[in-house]
Amino acid sequence: MTASGVYASLCITPDGSTLYGRRSAIDSPPRVVRLDAAEADQQPTFLDAPGGLGSLPGTLTEMHAEADDGFGLRAWLVLPEGASAERPAPLIVIPHGGPQRSWSAWTWQWNPWPLAARGYAVLLPDPALSTGYGQRMQERGRGEYGGRPYRDVITLTDAALARDDLDPARTGLAGWSFGGYLALRTVTRTDRFKAIASHAGMWNLEAFQADSAMHAYFHKIFGDPLTQPERYEADSPHRDAARITTPMLIVHGGKDYNVPVSQALGLHNDLKRFGVPVWFLYFPDEGHGVGKPYHLRLKYETVLNFFDHHVLGQEWRRPTLL
Image (cartoon, rainbow, N blue to C red; front, side, top):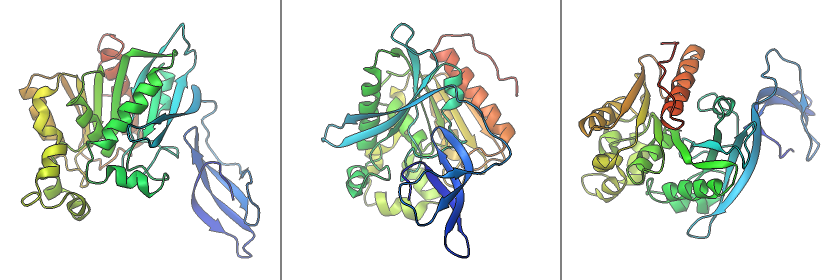
Protein backbone atom coordinates (compact mmCIF):
# COMPACT_ATOMS: atom_id res chain seq x y z
CA MET A 1 0.00 0.00 0.00
CA THR A 2 2.83 2.38 0.81
CA ALA A 3 6.63 2.22 0.86
CA SER A 4 6.91 5.32 2.98
CA GLY A 5 7.44 5.05 6.73
CA VAL A 6 6.53 2.49 9.39
CA TYR A 7 2.94 1.89 10.47
CA ALA A 8 1.52 0.72 13.81
CA SER A 9 -1.83 0.50 15.66
CA LEU A 10 -3.74 -0.12 12.44
CA CYS A 11 -7.56 0.00 12.59
CA ILE A 12 -9.90 -0.74 9.69
CA THR A 13 -13.35 0.78 9.23
CA PRO A 14 -16.37 -1.56 9.34
CA ASP A 15 -16.86 -1.40 5.56
CA GLY A 16 -13.20 -2.30 4.95
CA SER A 17 -12.50 0.76 2.81
CA THR A 18 -10.22 2.77 5.08
CA LEU A 19 -7.31 2.17 7.42
CA TYR A 20 -6.25 4.41 10.30
CA GLY A 21 -2.93 4.10 12.10
CA ARG A 22 0.24 5.79 13.31
CA ARG A 23 3.04 6.44 10.84
CA SER A 24 6.62 7.25 11.81
CA ALA A 25 10.08 7.34 10.25
CA ILE A 26 13.62 8.15 11.36
CA ASP A 27 12.88 11.80 10.59
CA SER A 28 9.18 11.87 11.55
CA PRO A 29 7.62 11.19 14.97
CA PRO A 30 4.40 9.11 15.11
CA ARG A 31 1.47 10.85 13.43
CA VAL A 32 -2.11 9.66 12.91
CA VAL A 33 -2.83 8.88 9.24
CA ARG A 34 -5.59 7.61 6.97
CA LEU A 35 -5.01 5.14 4.12
CA ASP A 36 -7.26 3.95 1.31
CA ALA A 37 -7.46 0.15 1.75
CA ALA A 38 -7.75 -0.39 -2.03
CA GLU A 39 -4.99 1.94 -3.27
CA ALA A 40 -1.38 0.95 -4.02
CA ASP A 41 1.77 3.09 -3.65
CA GLN A 42 -0.12 5.88 -1.94
CA GLN A 43 0.97 8.72 0.30
CA PRO A 44 -0.91 8.71 3.62
CA THR A 45 -3.28 11.48 4.61
CA PHE A 46 -2.05 13.05 7.85
CA LEU A 47 -4.75 13.92 10.36
CA ASP A 48 -4.69 16.83 12.78
CA ALA A 49 -3.56 15.95 16.30
CA PRO A 50 -2.06 17.80 19.27
CA GLY A 51 1.71 18.26 19.47
CA GLY A 52 4.34 18.36 16.79
CA LEU A 53 8.08 18.96 16.75
CA GLY A 54 8.45 21.45 13.91
CA SER A 55 11.57 21.31 11.77
CA LEU A 56 14.45 18.96 12.60
CA PRO A 57 18.01 20.22 13.21
CA GLY A 58 19.65 18.54 10.24
CA THR A 59 19.11 16.22 7.30
CA LEU A 60 18.74 12.48 6.83
CA THR A 61 20.51 10.51 4.11
CA GLU A 62 20.90 6.82 3.28
CA MET A 63 24.32 5.23 2.82
CA HIS A 64 25.64 1.83 1.75
CA ALA A 65 28.79 -0.26 2.08
CA GLU A 66 29.95 -3.77 1.22
CA ALA A 67 30.85 -6.20 4.02
CA ASP A 68 33.98 -8.36 3.88
CA ASP A 69 31.78 -11.30 2.80
CA GLY A 70 30.29 -9.29 -0.08
CA PHE A 71 26.93 -8.64 1.63
CA GLY A 72 25.43 -5.22 0.95
CA LEU A 73 25.07 -3.13 4.13
CA ARG A 74 22.87 -0.11 4.77
CA ALA A 75 22.70 2.70 7.33
CA TRP A 76 21.06 6.04 7.95
CA LEU A 77 23.26 9.11 8.39
CA VAL A 78 21.95 12.19 10.18
CA LEU A 79 23.95 15.32 9.33
CA PRO A 80 23.74 18.42 11.52
CA GLU A 81 23.18 21.82 9.99
CA GLY A 82 26.40 23.38 8.72
CA ALA A 83 28.39 20.15 8.25
CA SER A 84 30.78 20.58 5.32
CA ALA A 85 34.31 19.84 4.14
CA GLU A 86 35.35 23.15 5.73
CA ARG A 87 33.53 22.32 8.99
CA PRO A 88 33.44 18.52 9.32
CA ALA A 89 31.10 17.30 12.04
CA PRO A 90 32.01 14.93 14.87
CA LEU A 91 30.35 11.52 14.49
CA ILE A 92 28.45 9.34 16.98
CA VAL A 93 27.73 5.77 15.84
CA ILE A 94 24.61 4.13 17.36
CA PRO A 95 23.88 0.48 16.46
CA HIS A 96 20.31 -0.56 17.27
CA GLY A 97 19.05 -2.95 19.94
CA GLY A 98 17.24 -6.20 19.35
CA PRO A 99 19.23 -7.68 17.78
CA GLN A 100 16.29 -8.65 15.52
CA ARG A 101 15.22 -5.15 14.51
CA SER A 102 16.44 -2.33 12.28
CA TRP A 103 16.60 1.45 12.14
CA SER A 104 13.30 2.18 10.41
CA ALA A 105 10.99 4.06 12.78
CA TRP A 106 11.05 7.01 15.12
CA THR A 107 12.33 6.24 18.62
CA TRP A 108 12.39 8.20 21.86
CA GLN A 109 14.96 5.84 23.39
CA TRP A 110 18.12 6.73 21.45
CA ASN A 111 16.94 9.42 19.10
CA PRO A 112 19.61 10.94 16.80
CA TRP A 113 18.12 14.41 16.60
CA PRO A 114 19.15 15.74 20.06
CA LEU A 115 22.73 14.91 19.08
CA ALA A 116 22.30 16.61 15.70
CA ALA A 117 20.99 19.71 17.49
CA ARG A 118 24.29 19.75 19.46
CA GLY A 119 26.29 19.57 16.21
CA TYR A 120 26.98 15.83 15.95
CA ALA A 121 26.48 13.66 12.91
CA VAL A 122 24.87 10.33 13.81
CA LEU A 123 25.35 7.02 11.99
CA LEU A 124 22.56 4.46 12.47
CA PRO A 125 23.94 1.15 11.10
CA ASP A 126 22.00 -2.04 10.41
CA PRO A 127 24.57 -4.83 10.95
CA ALA A 128 24.14 -8.61 10.74
CA LEU A 129 20.99 -9.83 12.57
CA SER A 130 19.03 -6.75 11.45
CA THR A 131 15.52 -7.42 10.16
CA GLY A 132 14.18 -6.47 6.74
CA TYR A 133 17.15 -7.76 4.74
CA GLY A 134 16.23 -11.43 4.30
CA GLN A 135 17.22 -14.66 6.01
CA ARG A 136 20.85 -14.39 4.93
CA MET A 137 21.24 -11.31 7.13
CA GLN A 138 20.18 -13.45 10.11
CA GLU A 139 22.43 -16.36 9.20
CA ARG A 140 25.48 -14.06 8.93
CA GLY A 141 25.34 -13.17 12.63
CA ARG A 142 23.50 -15.97 14.38
CA GLY A 143 25.41 -17.21 17.40
CA GLU A 144 28.35 -14.82 16.99
CA TYR A 145 27.05 -11.59 18.45
CA GLY A 146 30.48 -10.01 18.77
CA GLY A 147 31.75 -11.23 15.39
CA ARG A 148 29.98 -10.36 12.17
CA PRO A 149 27.71 -7.62 13.65
CA TYR A 150 30.78 -5.88 15.08
CA ARG A 151 32.63 -6.03 11.77
CA ASP A 152 29.59 -4.68 9.92
CA VAL A 153 29.39 -1.69 12.27
CA ILE A 154 33.08 -0.93 11.69
CA THR A 155 32.66 -1.29 7.90
CA LEU A 156 29.77 1.18 7.86
CA THR A 157 31.68 3.54 10.17
CA ASP A 158 34.67 3.51 7.81
CA ALA A 159 32.37 4.20 4.84
CA ALA A 160 30.82 7.17 6.65
CA LEU A 161 34.17 8.61 7.70
CA ALA A 162 35.35 8.55 4.07
CA ARG A 163 33.08 11.57 3.61
CA ASP A 164 34.80 14.96 3.81
CA ASP A 165 32.01 16.46 5.95
CA LEU A 166 32.74 14.11 8.90
CA ASP A 167 35.72 14.32 11.26
CA PRO A 168 37.44 10.93 11.79
CA ALA A 169 39.41 12.35 14.75
CA ARG A 170 36.25 13.10 16.76
CA THR A 171 34.07 10.01 17.07
CA GLY A 172 32.01 8.28 19.74
CA LEU A 173 29.92 5.12 19.97
CA ALA A 174 26.67 4.53 21.85
CA GLY A 175 24.02 1.85 22.02
CA TRP A 176 21.11 0.37 23.94
CA SER A 177 20.46 -3.32 24.68
CA PHE A 178 22.16 -5.28 21.87
CA GLY A 179 23.55 -1.96 20.66
CA GLY A 180 24.97 -1.45 24.15
CA TYR A 181 26.55 -4.88 23.94
CA LEU A 182 28.09 -4.01 20.56
CA ALA A 183 29.51 -0.85 22.11
CA LEU A 184 31.14 -2.97 24.83
CA ARG A 185 32.42 -5.54 22.35
CA THR A 186 33.85 -2.73 20.21
CA VAL A 187 35.69 -1.02 23.06
CA THR A 188 37.53 -4.27 23.85
CA ARG A 189 38.80 -4.49 20.26
CA THR A 190 39.67 -0.94 19.26
CA ASP A 191 40.44 2.42 20.85
CA ARG A 192 39.49 4.38 17.74
CA PHE A 193 36.47 5.98 19.47
CA LYS A 194 37.01 8.82 21.94
CA ALA A 195 34.14 7.76 24.22
CA ILE A 196 31.57 4.99 24.63
CA ALA A 197 28.04 5.09 26.09
CA SER A 198 26.46 1.70 26.84
CA HIS A 199 22.82 1.54 27.94
CA ALA A 200 21.56 -1.84 29.21
CA GLY A 201 24.37 -3.67 27.45
CA MET A 202 25.39 -7.28 28.10
CA TRP A 203 28.83 -7.58 29.73
CA ASN A 204 29.25 -11.11 31.10
CA LEU A 205 27.32 -13.43 28.77
CA GLU A 206 27.49 -16.51 30.96
CA ALA A 207 26.11 -14.67 33.99
CA PHE A 208 23.56 -12.90 31.76
CA GLN A 209 22.06 -16.09 30.34
CA ALA A 210 21.44 -17.39 33.86
CA ASP A 211 19.78 -14.21 35.18
CA SER A 212 17.91 -12.80 32.18
CA ALA A 213 14.18 -13.09 31.55
CA MET A 214 15.31 -13.95 27.99
CA HIS A 215 17.12 -17.07 29.24
CA ALA A 216 15.35 -19.54 26.93
CA TYR A 217 15.89 -17.39 23.83
CA PHE A 218 19.57 -16.85 24.57
CA HIS A 219 20.19 -20.46 25.63
CA LYS A 220 18.73 -21.71 22.33
CA ILE A 221 21.17 -19.59 20.33
CA PHE A 222 24.34 -19.88 22.43
CA GLY A 223 23.84 -23.29 24.03
CA ASP A 224 24.58 -24.45 27.55
CA PRO A 225 27.72 -22.73 28.87
CA LEU A 226 28.65 -25.89 30.79
CA THR A 227 28.80 -28.06 27.68
CA GLN A 228 29.21 -25.42 24.94
CA PRO A 229 31.38 -22.66 26.42
CA GLU A 230 32.98 -21.69 23.09
CA ARG A 231 30.55 -18.96 22.09
CA TYR A 232 30.48 -17.45 25.56
CA GLU A 233 34.27 -17.34 25.66
CA ALA A 234 34.52 -15.83 22.18
CA ASP A 235 31.83 -13.15 22.51
CA SER A 236 31.71 -12.07 26.17
CA PRO A 237 33.28 -8.58 26.51
CA HIS A 238 34.16 -9.06 30.20
CA ARG A 239 36.96 -11.47 29.28
CA ASP A 240 38.81 -8.60 27.58
CA ALA A 241 38.22 -5.95 30.25
CA ALA A 242 41.95 -5.34 30.68
CA ARG A 243 42.16 -4.05 27.09
CA ILE A 244 39.76 -1.15 27.66
CA THR A 245 41.17 2.37 27.87
CA THR A 246 38.26 4.39 26.41
CA PRO A 247 36.15 6.53 28.81
CA MET A 248 32.68 5.08 29.26
CA LEU A 249 29.21 6.14 30.36
CA ILE A 250 27.00 3.33 31.69
CA VAL A 251 23.18 3.78 31.73
CA HIS A 252 20.92 1.19 33.33
CA GLY A 253 17.51 0.72 34.98
CA GLY A 254 17.02 -1.04 38.29
CA LYS A 255 13.94 -2.89 37.04
CA ASP A 256 15.54 -4.23 33.87
CA TYR A 257 14.73 -7.94 33.64
CA ASN A 258 15.94 -8.44 30.07
CA VAL A 259 19.48 -7.34 30.92
CA PRO A 260 19.63 -7.31 34.73
CA VAL A 261 21.40 -4.42 36.42
CA SER A 262 24.02 -6.86 37.70
CA GLN A 263 25.54 -6.61 34.20
CA ALA A 264 26.08 -2.87 34.67
CA LEU A 265 27.43 -3.33 38.19
CA GLY A 266 29.93 -5.93 37.00
CA LEU A 267 30.98 -3.66 34.13
CA HIS A 268 31.39 -0.68 36.46
CA ASN A 269 33.46 -2.69 38.93
CA ASP A 270 35.74 -4.05 36.20
CA LEU A 271 36.33 -0.62 34.68
CA LYS A 272 37.18 0.84 38.09
CA ARG A 273 39.52 -2.07 38.75
CA PHE A 274 41.46 -1.38 35.55
CA GLY A 275 41.49 2.40 36.01
CA VAL A 276 39.19 3.27 33.10
CA PRO A 277 37.34 6.62 33.44
CA VAL A 278 33.68 5.68 33.99
CA TRP A 279 30.38 7.40 34.76
CA PHE A 280 27.25 5.50 35.85
CA LEU A 281 23.74 6.93 35.33
CA TYR A 282 21.36 4.69 37.28
CA PHE A 283 17.53 4.86 37.21
CA PRO A 284 16.21 2.68 40.08
CA ASP A 285 12.60 2.64 38.82
CA GLU A 286 13.20 2.25 35.06
CA GLY A 287 13.21 -1.03 33.15
CA HIS A 288 15.07 -2.13 30.03
CA GLY A 289 14.59 1.31 28.52
CA VAL A 290 14.10 4.80 29.89
CA GLY A 291 10.45 5.77 29.54
CA LYS A 292 9.62 8.68 31.83
CA PRO A 293 9.91 12.04 30.05
CA TYR A 294 11.93 13.64 32.86
CA HIS A 295 14.33 10.70 32.87
CA LEU A 296 14.70 10.86 29.09
CA ARG A 297 15.64 14.53 29.31
CA LEU A 298 18.18 13.70 32.01
CA LYS A 299 19.64 10.85 29.94
CA TYR A 300 20.08 13.01 26.84
CA GLU A 301 21.63 15.85 28.83
CA THR A 302 24.08 13.43 30.45
CA VAL A 303 24.98 11.71 27.17
CA LEU A 304 25.51 15.02 25.37
CA ASN A 305 27.67 16.45 28.15
CA PHE A 306 29.67 13.22 28.26
CA PHE A 307 30.41 13.32 24.51
CA ASP A 308 31.08 17.06 24.59
CA HIS A 309 33.73 16.41 27.24
CA HIS A 310 35.46 13.39 25.71
CA VAL A 311 34.86 13.81 21.96
CA LEU A 312 35.04 17.60 21.69
CA GLY A 313 37.41 18.24 24.59
CA GLN A 314 35.09 20.60 26.45
CA GLU A 315 35.03 21.00 30.21
CA TRP A 316 32.85 18.42 32.00
CA ARG A 317 29.47 19.79 33.05
CA ARG A 318 27.41 17.96 35.60
CA PRO A 319 23.83 17.66 34.21
CA THR A 320 21.69 20.41 35.72
CA LEU A 321 18.70 18.04 35.98
CA LEU A 322 20.61 16.06 38.61
